[in-house]
Length: 336
Length: 279
Image (cartoon, rainbow over all chains, first blue to last red; front, side, top):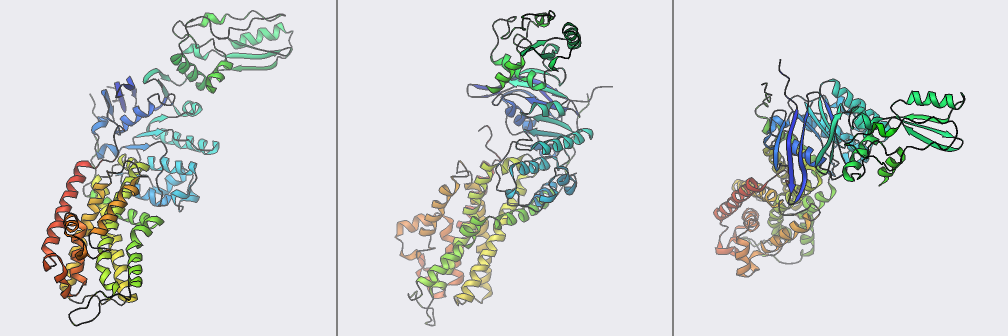
């Protein structure tokens, strides 16, 4: 049996505007039924890539196939299989939610029931309201509703939850999970890394027009980027240590402190956001010295603290800044 | 190797969706307060102003010596202005705005045929233009006591001048919508064009009082011919002698307006894009 063709297939995709290379040779596949998160800083090329796949932009070179069709030449029958949620727009919105969805449902050969979609995005009480009178988050939900009304095989979600309150965001995740369960293939871009971690099967990270990493959500960045961090407070002094064996370290600490509870103990696994920030920072500012990270593992000053596992032992040669920088550094990266 | 087959779409959907677009467009049009005032009611406002301001002035007499009122004299011009505003001004501004606010981009991502979109726009202009003309005729007839023609031929002329004029005007509006770079500049680009045309084409100023060179310029544009066609319908027969060459020249109206229709269609076909790619 042959593997079914990928829903999206991209090979050495390039796009240049004059001298600027917005996309500089990107390749990836999205399998049928998969949710793929495309991540990256603003201006990294995410939107350019997604708009090429949606058929809005022409590529400079490379190959792209979306549902078996070259997106630069996709006809109406091809578009009928897509659902597109663009980044927010500023339409005049002189129609009601129900009118707009009923109208758009008519464009598609096999649409979802309008009332069902309105309920799925939680706008039942607003269905007779003019779209221009909705709040930003509510308008965004209309955008999502319009993206799924046609019962798409492939759904593009470009920063879909911008302006959502946390509760609506959770509702939206449920909606996406139900679409996934029905077999919809989804290409998602988002700045909320928890969203990507919750919804995505795989993620690709774009920076400077290049795909700097790609993999399943729980493997992206490599095992080394996921080395847990143990934190505790020793007589008022904050301590932290990276180790692949946190339980062993905690057990050793408890033993060495004479069996008492450790103050403010926590074992932190780097989130997708931490890993993402490390990868992007490493790409944008490659560290010259691979071994010496900005914050070395804390030296035990005194007392019975056990000798920590040397963190350098985990150090991958090709990922210099990754695992030595501490969570504190990550938050600096975040703020920058 | 497995290939993915794209399911075909049912036939006849272009017209069905076009009709669905007309409903959607007309509904949205009347909910947009400024377009209702500046496009839909504007000729009515102007007719009211002219009819009251010049009520004591003489605009000549018909063959039996009856005075022609200011309202009767300005009615054909206002009907022609309505065609230009409902079609060209309305659509040029509307589509330029839709191009810059994301409406067209959203539609471009759906399986809506471009032709259905055009049907929707032209249909919206037909519906709103007809309602506008009806309103003008009712107000002129009832409020200002203008005697409307009773002959069937006159109404036949009105019907074709209206239909041809409003369609040409709509198509030219779609063509002109490419000109403004942004939605915000759309009114600033379009309104001066329509305003100048109204002044040189015999809408506000009597065409016969314009210098010949200005008449020649106006001859090159469709509004002058639409206004002339409307005068042929609504002014007394003895006014024909004041027209250029002493004739209503309905053949000229037909030829000039049709020529502009063809020009508009060609420009639309060559230049219309859902979005500005790669901008």
